[in-house]
Length: 97
Image (cartoon, rainbow, N blue to C red; front, side, top):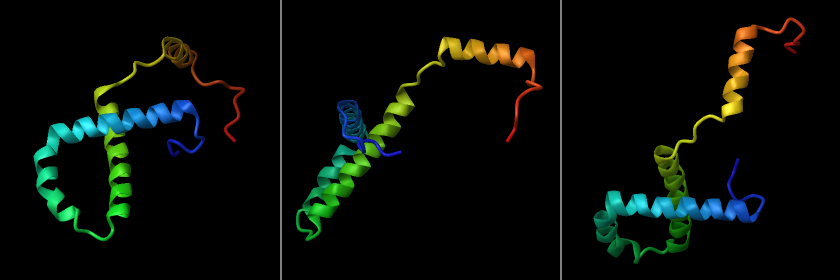
């Protein structure tokens, strides 16, 4: 499942949120080391590929940061349905295959 495959507005907003969260997490945890390493990066011949890889890393970091700091509670009706199903026990008419 890759974010942005369909190109919809919702996916773009999600990607933007991941990028923003990744940038914020990066700034909090390592801005000084990034600035020190910048001098060596500017002289590289593969700067385009390095920039693309950095963007992907920032998206992944943003995804992880959002998952770490935001957790959605389980849907109320889903929780009730699971409790009812657990009380009833296994369905004898259900097919496993």
